[in-house]
Image (cartoon, rainbow, N blue to C red; front, top):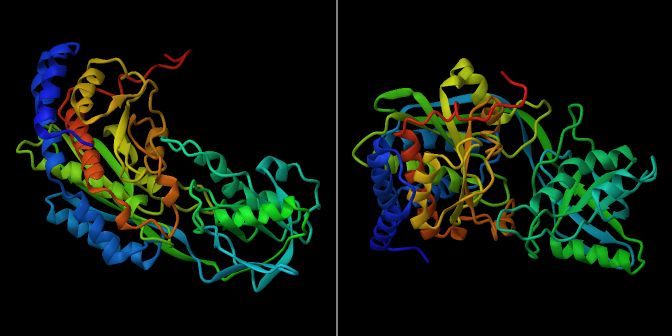
Length: 476
């Protein structure tokens, strides 16, 4: 349940009475940040944007015609909302098309299985039929003797993903998805099969990219829906020999993706840039509502709320809808995030700070600020603005930011994080169930309000976030 506007105002007043005093010159900025926050909570464009893009274009696989067409539409949408300097910047990409896929247990107890080919996995060039070898972890697969999987299918079932608010259970399973096909190929396997990287028990597999090794994905790889993974693993536990038939017509092709960029130009320091990032592309099974049309909606909604507040902030707010976040590439070029960094060149020095929204649309519960900023006057001001809508300060500094703004972070740009409740995110992530109806409009509005209040505070402040970065031991 969210607080009413009256409760918000009362909470903000109470906090102002007890909070550590902030710098006098920031008092007006803090007050305006609260006003922008409340206005964004009451009205914003986020639901309109996410509704239109998912309905008009559906799934937007990286480099596909639907992603390219959605980018053209999004640029026009940004212009209509008053963004300036709107442009589309293309970059080359290896695209991937799923084609048709199937899987089944064959032999004395035949059963159909529900699978999804892993992103950028090659097709099977017909049918692969072989006995599976079960592994309980990626480490066990890696430790298998050389040649021991010749003529077999490697099957990794590391168990159900641990459901956590911060999504920490995803990392161990996504690692299997990324590295599993190469590990299986090194042991002589014909194909790779894994339990889906998801927290649900729906008969709906989770896709996701696998990893190129020396310019190729070495094996056809598949994710198995959780109930079917349970069935296969039970058969193995019963001592049954499990033989599986796999087919896939997946293939890659040469194409391009693109970043869509638009600015709310700063009033007095327009060359100081704050980047708000999300990604345009999605997987092909659903319509990419939570991953990540929602992030674009939230960042666009926040920037628009600031622009509509009646007074532009001092610094420029730049919204970037990155292309091709979801897929690995033969060369580690950073996809949309890398293309953006290459495109700005030395102007990266003008980038003050960056944040990314790419974890659905459920409520923001925590703020992570760059190392060096925690405990500062700015951090206290941010807490004063965000606490009334249920956002607390994280005890840990934010270092990475996310896949799209990661290249900026590596280039020295400080990053912040508005952490969202991910308790149900991996029930939907990369599945056919990632659709518009899964978005809660009230929680999305709380996201927009949190982003709008914080970004106003950043954009109209005098804080030099780069100068506040800690100096490494031994540095001069």
